[in-house]
Image 1 (cartoon, rainbow, N blue to C red):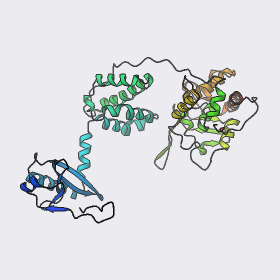
Image 2 (tube, rainbow, N blue to C red):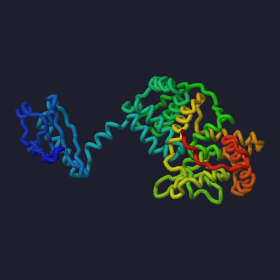
Image 3 (spheres, one colour):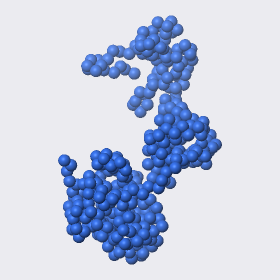
Image 4 (cartoon, rainbow, N blue to C red):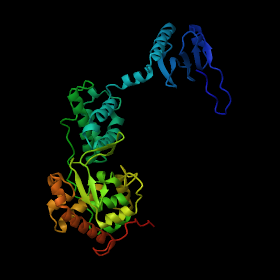
Length: 405
C-alpha cells in the first residue's frame, strides 16, 4: 500500500516499514507502520497513544481495514498468524471485513427489518414502502443494534409512548409495522424470535377520519394545489395510484389501471391497484385540460411527485392557516361525497372509486357502465371546478395553477 498524495499535490511520504518487534511497538511513533515480516499487517498508533494491530488488504480495487485488537490484548506472533489467515482468505476471493460486518449485524432488529422487506414485504405487500418508512424513521433509531429476540413488550410500550406524544395514529401504524416484522420472524423461525413482543400492546383509540373539503374551502385549496393534488380531487382515485399514472395507460380519454403490478426491465413501474382489481376511470374535461399542460415526453404524468404529496398538503394547510389538517386521501373522500350529493348513489361512488365492495367482476360489466361513469365523472368534476373558481358548472376553465403573490 503506497501513501496517498497530499492535498496540495505534493508526493506522499513513503510508507513506514520495519520488522515489528516488542521493543519497536513500545516506542513506535504515531501513525501507521507496516510489518515487513507479514504482508498486510500494520501497527496503528493513534494521536492519543492507543496502539492496535490492523490488517489492510485490497478487495475489488478498494482498501479494506480489518481491526485485529489492541497491542496489549494480543501477542505479536498471534497478530502475524491471524493476518496470514486473513490474507489467505483474500486470495480465495473472500472479503473478511464485509463478512465480519454481516456477522455483527446478524440477529439485530436492523437486519431483521431489512430481511423482512427484501424477503417478504416487497413480494406480498403493495404498500410496503409506507410501513418501511415508519420502521426506518421510528424503530431503527431505537432498536437497530438490539438483538431481535431480546426486544421485549416493555420496549414496544416505550416506543408507543414516545411516538403517541406526537401522533397517536402514527404510533398505531408503527406498532402494526413492527408487529408484521415479528410475526413473520416467528413464522419463519428467524434469529431465534419465539414471540411477537407487539402482541397484547394496546393501540391508541382513534376516530374514523371523515375530513372533506367544504364548498367554502375549495377556492383557497384549489388555488394552492399542484397538478397531482388537483388530479386526485377531479378523479377521486387513490393518491398512491394517481402519482403513478403513466401516459401509456391513458387511452381515448380513459385511464386504465391494472390490478396487477407491471414490471419493465426488472423495475416495477406500476404497483397495481390496492384491491388487485383492474379499473377504468373516465378523465373528465377539466382533468384532460390539466393533462394538456403537462410534459408528455415522460413516462409518468406527474414526474417527481411520488412520496411528496403528504408534505405538500401540510405546507398548504400551514400557508392557509388551516387547523383541521387535510390529507391527500381527504380529496378522494371529497370527490366521493360529491358523487352521492349529486344524487348518483353509493353504488356509483364505489364503482367509480374502485372500492372493494363496489367492484365490477367482469370486463363486460365494466364497459357496460362506461356511459354512466362518464356522466358521473363529468358532472362531479364540473361541479368541483365551479365551486372552486366561481364559474358555472358547464364552463371548463384553464387548469394552470395561479402564481402565489
